[in-house]
Image 1 (cartoon, rainbow, N blue to C red):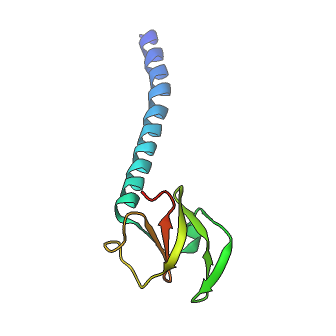
Image 2: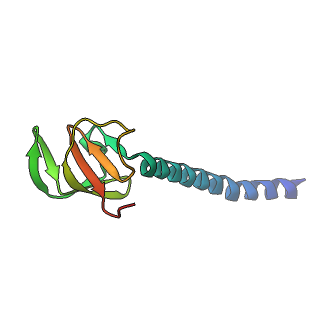
Image 3: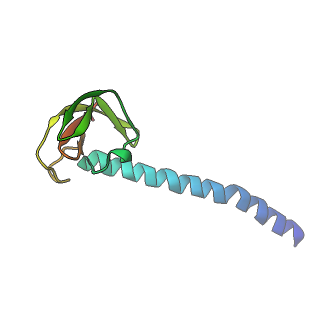
Length: 107
């Protein structure tokens, strides 16, 4: 009986972390697919992963040459009117108050 309990314990030590890692990666993959399918709307600048140098100002907000969101880098494309998720293409990122960025990889 003790050998069976030890075996179960060792299996749990391997399988639980593996399951947690797989679940994390699956959810990350699902978020990336949703982002690629609909585009991205970002309401707060601090939600971005990174931003490059400032190239201008629009409505009191700095315009950065590139921004990175969830590992995808976007390049400044122009100013756009208010957008909703249905009107964004899959490679676009809309940053309030009206900055439009396009994915550099073009996917």
